[in-house]
Image (tube, rainbow, N blue to C red; front, side, top):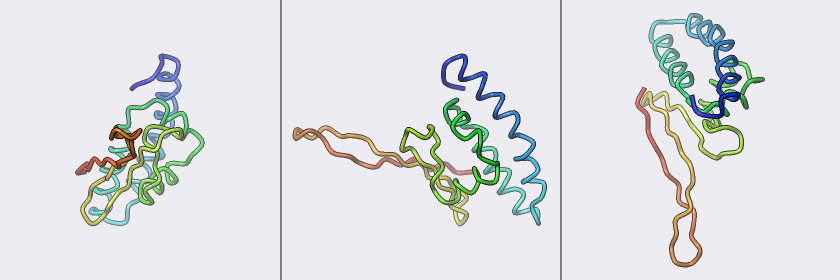
Amino acid sequence: MKGSQKQIKWAEDIKNKKLDGFNEIVNAAKDETAAVVLKKIVDYILNIEKAKFWIDYRDYSEYRIIDALFRGSLLIDGFNNDKKAKFDPATTTVTESWKVIVQDGRGGHYEERKNIVKL
């Protein structure tokens, strides 16, 4: 986990409290295929290493966190960052996207960057 020692302890406590809820969601899947996909989604979320993410999402239910990933509005570096993640069920991938400033001799411009994670 990444953050200050205080943030890391707090984030790990939050993450541990959410673990049972995420497992319940996976276990409630209607069929084996859905359970496998949900397990991969939950594993992706549980592997988010920014303490700020867990602290910012502490008041969100596990369902809302998964829903944000489906909608493409899950802010994986915390609320004050624009790095978003979106799950694509057709390809079973998560696309992480963010903007960076690229220097161009005129002060720079924004370009979007993407990282595709195969689940």
